[in-house]
Image (cartoon, rainbow over all chains, first blue to last red; front, side, top):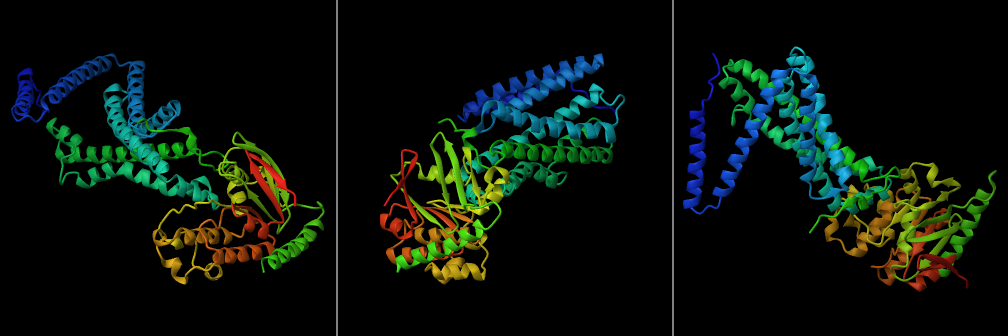
Length: 267
Length: 227
């Protein structure tokens, strides 16, 4: 069975849906029409651009082109993850930690996926490497920024309780352990919920895509299991690395809490 | 009564100093503060023999807490401190802070359950009684205890780690006279066991009761008050 290819006429259905939605919003004074239209146009432009870029990259089979594209994606993810925080470390550290954690988590699981289960030839071929990395990157970035956000606000809120432990002879790891666990748990919760709901409450996106593209549903579910495992592992690595680096930055080698390295929230 | 305790404390501490003096290294102070300073105060230099108690008075903001926090190695600083001749910089910070217990003026708690902070042992129960706390306070949520009760529980939390030095920041600020006497009795007993105490107090009479030597903090500098 071959995938059903959408024609331009088919896309008019999508346009009609958005326009109808906007019209509804306008007549019911929901105040959403502007946002809806802008978002739709933005999405269409972004995806058309990505489609063209991928088409170009796939066509050229150049390692450097692949590496270049991945680098751009990593930079964008680093910026996104860093920019989402309320409490901030000094900017260099902030983006440094967010980026390091996101890239580490993504690269480790992407390489595991490419070198073991998927094994495309060659293993870095753009058609497999780029979509897989992109999928993982988005997820790991979410987990990383959730982890940092949770941890930074918890440390700010519980400064005195943490210091009470330090005063009583706790090392920085002992004093922070509970908060690191809390951050990692919060960061992983959406993924864990997704895993619990997979197939019963929602049809996972990857599996849906594969089935629509003509794959046998059982094979599609295998894919989903593999990719979900890669995602949750990458998220775990990203969230944990981000939490430990944040704690490391906000304490020093004498186990002191150094919150002067945290910029106060503007406003 | 108070005079008796001071004399007893000093007498026993003399004994401790002798034992330390007998070691090959000669006289070793229980706590030696060596030119500790930061942008907020210092340099501070002084030494305490085992069982000795010094008191520090001074206006709010004069740098008393700054100094205690530096001695406990809680804030970045220059200089060093030693306990029984062992330098702070030469041992892991967590071990140092167990030996040199800092009890802040407003102690913090990481949960509402008292026994999360100290096990319900015979030693703790004994201190609860001696400090005039209700016996059921170990099972009462911290949020329902008074400031004075929490202050004394924080003292127990520190004492049960068997520190060599206690850095006390106004430990009796929320206590009435009779309870203050009880706290002082416990502190004198600790001195008799060789614990050195740096006591920050706004109460001049308490300073006179407790101190072997009295100091005054003024604009980040420590001056001994000579009798």
